[in-house]
Image 1: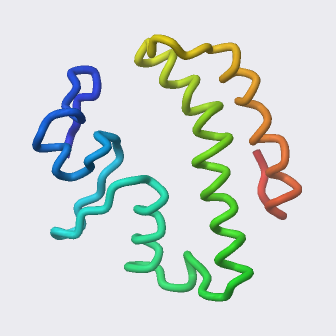
Image 2: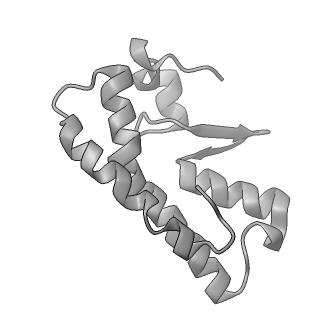
Length: 118
């Protein structure tokens, strides 16, 4: 489903039935509707990837959850917020704060993910 954010399609009644918060993304997988990017990732991992995408053991599951939290926190309030400001001219958000936060979440990745390169 295409959602025109600039025209406010995500705040219209039809879309609000899918996500009461009026946010994207929303996944409709053959009638199973999942709002929220992290919830979608967990759903897809369990539905189609099993333990190869989302470990069942406590340590592995916690490691995945850690990175989902980084995506919902520092990355959302740095790079994602900077994009919101630049692309959608979001009023009231300060680009300087987002720019400062942009680089922080990228710094620890090489140590936290062995074999990963930026």
